[in-house]
Amino acid sequence: MKNIRNFSIIAHIDHGKSTLADRFLEITGLTNDRTKRAQFLDKMDIERERGITIKAQTVRLPYKKDGQDYILNLIDTPGHVDFSYEVSRSLKACEGVLLVVDATQGVEAQTLANLYMAVENNLAIIPVINKIDLPNSDPEKVKGEIVEVTGCSPDEIIQVSAKTGQGMDEIFNRIIDVIPPPKGSPDNELKALIFDSWFDAYRGGVALIRIFEGSIEKGQKLYLMHHGKTYEALEIGYFSPEAIETTKLGVGEVGYLVAGIKNIRDIKIGDTVTDFKRKTPHALPGFKELKPMVFSSIFPVDSNKYEDLCEAIEKLSINDSSFTYEKETSTALGFGFRVGYLGILHMEIVRERLEREYNLDLIITAPAVIYRVILLNGKIMEIDNPAKLPDIQHIAKIEEPIYKVTIHTPAEFVGVILKLCEERRGAQQAMNYLSSNRVIIEYHLPMNEIIMEFYDKLKTISRGYATMDYEFLEFKEDKLVKLDIMINGNPVDALSAIVHKDKAYYKGRELTKRMREVIPRQMFEVIIQSKIGSKVISRDTVKPFRKNVTAKCYGGDISRKRKLLEKQKEGKKRMKNIGNVEIPQEAFLEILKID
Image (tube, helix red, strand yellow):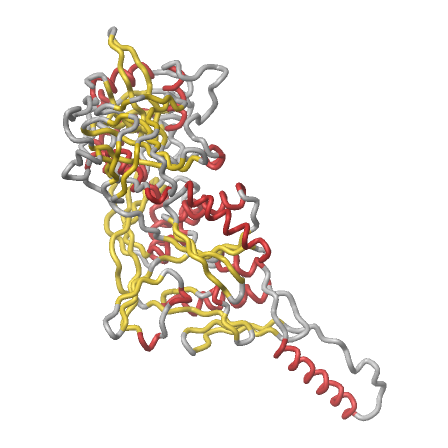
């Protein structure tokens, strides 16, 4: 056990975490020229294309130092804020972390967020500056920023290039010297942490585990403490980098467990595995149920593909237990699903996987957040769909989720970023200078304002330099109203939204204007209205096609022409009463583009 080291790499997106992991595999001889590929631990196409890690992966690295054989367990974690709970569980499985910072970019938002998480878990921190081989790198400036945020001495910071392999031996030596070996006793009751899971078509649910006390043997009867179910260890092993089966995993080791679990939702991330006959009295701390924060509705473009969508969502949920779904019917879009996600990036990933892996064309409604509604009778409701909001006369108040947003930016963009946050109903909390040119801005912002293109806008106004991180703070009351869109008097439930009262008129006007541009002309007049409660706040009209019925009248009395026009008017009115307006998919995408 004294020769085991469990560590993780924390870094902002695109700071070279996956490249560093590739170099580790190469140096320890686990990959060679024939088997190696870029981003080796990223298994999904989306991860490789976007340069992000979505699923945690583990790899056992064998390393020899001073004649001693060491086992280094690398736990590769997601970097994005949407997966912060998974990151916290992965860090719980470690004794130390490599804090990787890009020599050209400096300390950024998610680096800092994950660093604070590591500090909370009392992990040993090894600061590393990566990409020192690039011509525009500035290691000395970045070194100052790292000293500022970690309080370490400049001599402790390792300068490396994961691409060329420069400085890699120093990292390995520092991991062995600085990160403590795991604690625990093989004689105690079994206590193992599940920090990630996925579904295998042949073996069922596969859980990644870290043993804190005792040991697991093949064939052992196990008990999942939070789930309260009993399973048998059918297969145990570790990744190096491919799966290697073993008969026993001891205290301090990291590996995988296959126990014939048919439903992935039975494996809860953060759950404690113990021995069925000799249960541990206390579960490992920090477990919580994953709660979706962003919701949207998904419908097939072709209603005949609904069965295909049912099958696709079911299969995807087997691999990704962190999103929720329930069946939904919309008068405008037919049958579909209401889906809950961990955040905006998670929503994009789910949509992209459904479209790519299952060959579907989908309509996705505007993202919404959970609102807490307090009724006059004292009852509290949590609403994730604007269509479910009760009538205004029954509501005492509506509360929306407020998030703490931390933005890292070069000093020259501070003005425009403050303006953006103020426009989005933000309340400034702090502004600190990390160095003469790096600023950390902290705001409290409603989640509803963050999900509507906030990140894209932030990147645009800062020319891509600003980065952000956010975490849930509280529910807070505000002047919120339900905005309904009506077409010829019929509400389009898929376009309902809960908005701030001060922005409702602008949003309603913009929406009706854009809807008029995308709804094709009919043989009858199409009236588009936006309203709050019973009050119409804006209206637009799509003019009908009109035949020139008076073309055949040459001269004669005006009453002949009037009679023909009246007859045409009656026909149009009758048509409007029985006609259906075809709303194209673009109409539902337009709502996403309104700032």
